[in-house]
Length: 144
Image (cartoon, rainbow, N blue to C red; front, side, top):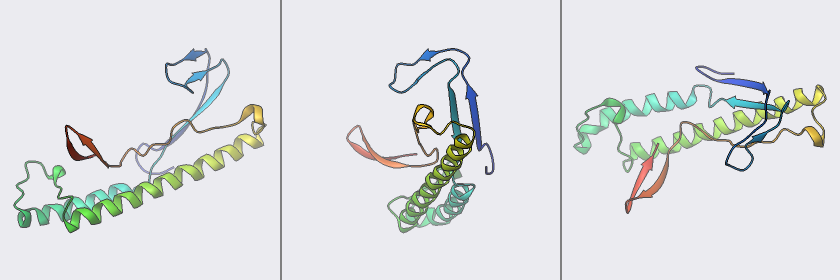
């Protein structure tokens, strides 16, 4: 399904359980599917490329790096280009998971699990390599 730790896992529950959040209850015999997949390496390539660009650009901005992985200048032209590329990789990852979900539904439908009583629905869809601007302590910060 991709490089690294990308996988699709099907689980048949052997006991019932209810979690405190809505939508997280499962019944005996219920099947759940976990898809862990992203941009098939594109996100990593984007990160590596822009870390190298940030390292080369840091002296121009008077940034002294204590750790090369913390290289960032988000308000710079390099930083804006990185965010655009990162968001593109995240969109690709979303589309990738949507296709995997589509084909998984098709496979389960062929096995008799395509009816209204056995519908596969998405509970969460999150990108694990992403960043967004948030406000914390009165400051706007980029959370990765």
